[in-house]
Length: 397
Ligand SMILES: [Zn+2]
Image 1 (cartoon, rainbow, N blue to C red):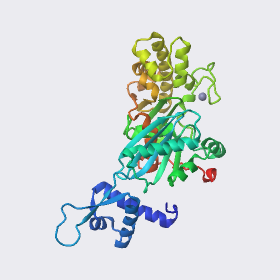
Image 2 (cartoon, rainbow, N blue to C red):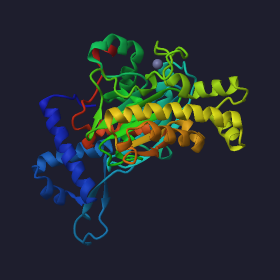
Image 3 (cartoon, helix red, strand yellow):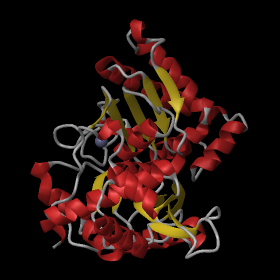
Image 4 (tube, rainbow, N blue to C red):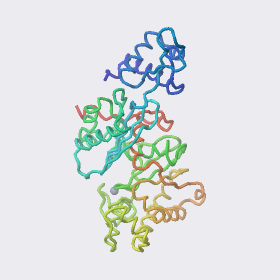
């Protein structure tokens, strides 16, 4: 890894990006074609290509149409489809999700594996490394990797919360830097999922998007006026901690009766089992719903109604054009989404009723990891006013 940040390294980085971008836009080019298009001196281009070839970002191949007979056949340079430019990792509560993008900015693959909720960071990082190793059938090269975008549970980005964030992340960025040798950007994993859904998924092209994820936790993210919203203290999107029942159960956040206490996976399964049902996981609950189990249907109606009321309140406050609902609990399908839609429609400002489109998320469990990649590439207009969130370097020194 070259030293970063200095003016010379930034200049070289800029030149590398220029060359990579030309290959991205034009496909394979010969050295002389690249030279004409990039405007760099012969020596500079030679140096840049030497670095890109050595790292594996760019590969050479003999040009089929080259004139034969005299000298060496003309050589073309092309982006290596198996070289990773950026990795996204979502360290969710009970699973690690990874995804990678190559220098052509194509997603080359994603992978996930569940784990126990209390697995230490060292083991989660090891799991992430192993999962990255499985992408592209194990052919993924990381010699030219630029950076890793990481999603974690909980607020990220509060400048006044350095010590608390450091405790929670417990050296995670340092562990990743040690393993992969590249900078690590960290943000809230659900906000990253919202970003990915707004770039590539159910809300692609949306300028005002509300994303809600119903998983082991309940959270979300907002795109407001074409920008991913982080909030003053990195707290934007904590929809799971909106109170839905002031006399309700205690929440992990320290509050009482939060949406998460009724709409998380655990909360729904517990409520179902208390009501006489029997399901240890979401697939079992889905099976009960499919068999027409009235207890399960009634419960999902109640949960969906509470979610819909919260969404209506959020819509009235923010005015999104699209609501995206993701997370494992959406596998319950119409039993949940139907009541959500009904309550949303009943409680939203009438003028907004037919202007907000509710959609299911399309990127699945890889959404957070894909958002990490978007954060690293920093190309989406949704991020043009969004700061890159690198953790305090002192934290893992
Ligand atoms: Zn809470």
